[in-house]
Image (cartoon, rainbow, N blue to C red; front, top):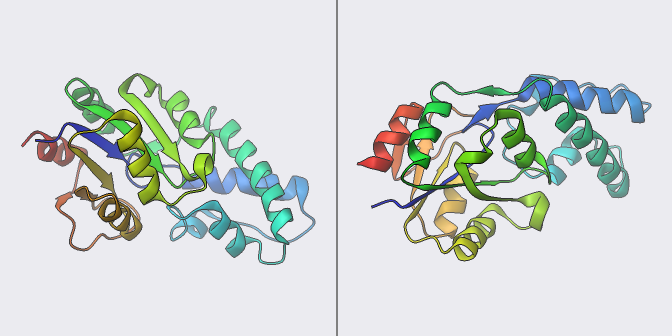
Length: 208
């Protein structure tokens, strides 16, 4: 029996690649004298990775301290934009979260920057559904360790992870918990314990 559900965020609950591209381009224009331009497609293979890896790919010409500074600017622009222009929730996500939160404790563990999950919860008004969350920006630890951190902090008994990328499967394996692979996201998880094509499938799997 599944008691708790831990969700990935990007590619699992919503898609905000257009907002990320828009916000990062705003930060670049404000703070860099260069011809770098990012698009929605730029982030197709980058979402789910930690920001240090993303920044190294987009700004290879910058030193580490300059990338850290740009990370701050990009995150500030993104969080501000998302509160005005929310990302696109995948079909059925609001209904699924409302139903599952009635009988399960829900959590988020993401490789995102500090403050991103809080922005998501505020932009969607989903804070009422979640018991807790943790991200790479909070701890600078890999996702598997952060899943373990949530399990320990909140005393989870029978959790399951929901994600869309190979790294999510590896993180769930590290934490020794099963994973639901959502096929509508950005990547592929081979040998997942469960496969969900829709939000309704997630609900069905959890309640089966």
